[in-house]
Length: 234
Ligand code: ADP
Image 1 (cartoon, rainbow, N blue to C red):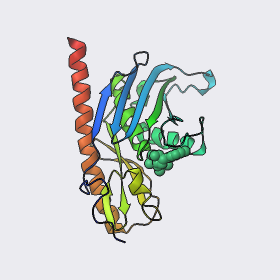
Image 2 (cartoon, rainbow, N blue to C red; image 1 turned 30 degrees about the horizontal axis):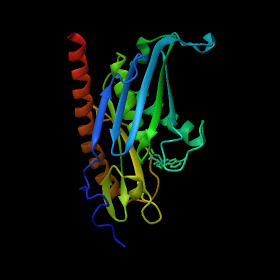
Image 3 (cartoon, rainbow, N blue to C red; image 1 turned 60 degrees about the vertical axis):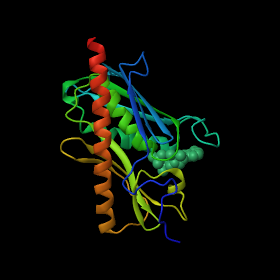
Image 4 (cartoon, rainbow, N blue to C red; image 1 turned 120 degrees about the vertical axis):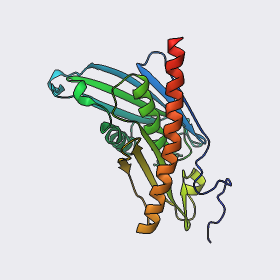
């Protein structure tokens, strides 16, 4: 059966509704919330602070550590709390997708910790986490060369779409889901995971959708950061 109209009526290049906020955790050095559809990610940044144990310190550059976790209440069936292979993998790819933009050579011997908590999950959580983490890093005043935004694209049936929801991800034997993270100026791809089948032509189309979606996210990140600075100056 071909997938013609999207389940929730969105256009192929239309991401779910988005919302972003910074300063959501007062005790953190920087924090942010990013919501896309029913997926909500909260990121909190702690540091730069001295790295312990000391033998791990690098006098040349700092260490960015990302910790991704999904709350047990974030999905319809209670998720087993604690780390899993999935959360370890997502923490690692999140770190890699942000490493390229953080000026780590300005932070010798220190660590910057980013904690990402998914409080509500309806697909696309790693992308929402990366987007929230980039916002939280900027909110913490960490020196960054450019911003990072992430969105998933993919193939549902024979249709190329942006920002798959859970229903689309589970369509028939499962959609082809491609989380993509991108930098704001150089448009460098810092995350691309591909699970499923897709032709080269379709992949190029999907990447074009990802770039369009990331542009929307960059605009939102900019707007939120700008108004938080204006608020601080008052
Ligand atoms: P992502 O959230 O980045 O798309 P996955 O493809 O691994 O990553 O997960 C897809 C979706 O499946 C999640 O967003 C969530 O809605 C759901 N999910 C993941 N893990 C669980 C779990 N342990 N229990 C229930 N649902 C889950």
